[in-house]
Length: 305
Image 1 (cartoon, one colour):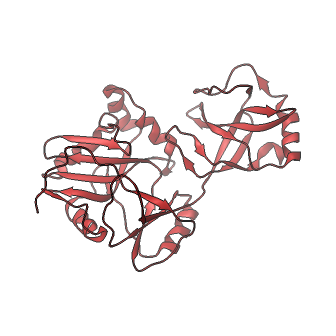
Image 2 (cartoon, one colour):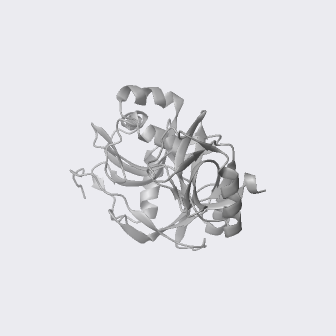
Image 3 (cartoon, helix red, strand yellow):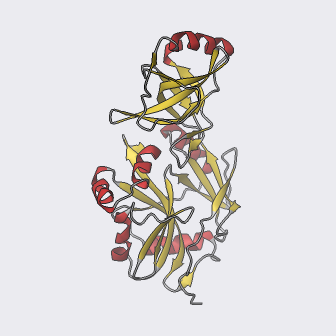
């Protein structure tokens, strides 16, 4: 049955969290890419690009507008935009694209920070809404109509969740998503038909400052080096013993500096800036849209070895 192209953009379907990878004949599994959730709306004439909150991203990712050259009929695509650094997806890298404010800068960044659009679902095709079709049928149509060309890449489906999760952990990727093969697309909310199983990746950061509780340091300010600049990516206050915090206080008190070492200095009361000489290995949950690490834990500190 024919249906009109949606007058209003659709909020994406979201997965719930699952704590452990599993195998099931009723599910297929996809890599969870570490990027920005993006939906592409092509009504047959105009291309509009939006994020999960329906904010326009047409300016930030102009290369995705070539969908009008690849497909001659209206579609709505759902997927994740990623940017690579050293061969692996980098959330801070893709956020440099996502925060662009001018068309001139966007065109410049197309070559400086190329992106890939990892497409994993199809919500509208020609004159039909596909929201009520089961997932496996939407996948069949998607693979028949969308070529992997330019920035567009079809996300691969796997039948073994446990094996896939072990492999993405080995590669240091974000996680996997288990999708029920008979599930419809439920817009605007979370559904148990999609379940995300997350790897807790690790990243090496530099210490750019600290805060104190009483006479002892209680949190460290994390910095990520990007092209000679130190990017503030959050605070971490767990993972060390009381004795280690005390030792750290003695060491870092001799490394203080007057000005912040970060290019995006945070506004934090009572912060002490330090020379970013020391590195730390951080385990974290994921990235926020503000390029901060969520649920960070210190796993190793170079100055405490």
